[in-house]
Length: 112
Length: 123
Image 1: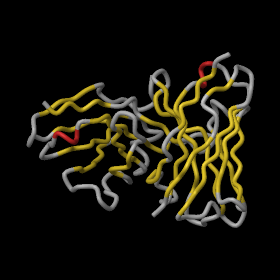
Image 2: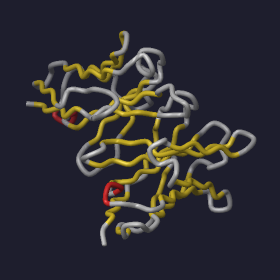
Image 3: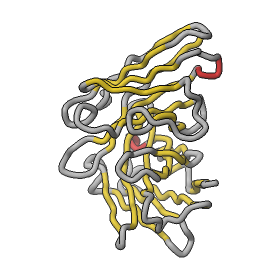
């Protein structure tokens, strides 16, 4: 069981928008803006697409956006494209006795 | 352009030590603004942060509680690389291991990943 909760799968048609949720607790998502999102295609390493809840690294299309409300962070992909089909993971800093980064279990996005 | 190149064996026997190295190009392991992580991924445990090393006037290492008694991460400034040693491995340590850069300091924006090394623990 992963520390952050994500839906196992979501789907959408090309051109549509989808939102992936990432639910944590008061020790992580709710208390810190240190949430990131990663995209992973089969056989490749995860790729950073969002950091600090809503910031995009250089080169990431603005179709990808992030937000947070309470203990739930969200990734929204607008104008879905076939190439967006991948697994998506969230991460967050978690307050504990030592430094700790936790991840969600991942969401498989299918572009129908 | 920053690149991380991993090396190390893909097969380790139970009870032995898993050793991986991550060579850095385009940045410095001694950077005062970056941190260098090891993260692994398996079907049973998902993505799991193992530890990190960073330099802020002196070297710091931090480890996940789940592996703290078995792990060592060492920077090597002469070769601009850092390494992972995980002792007393079991089949549960079978995973893809990644070295990763965090250039954001305090935001965990893990922006550069190595290519990954599939490590199988088996006799």
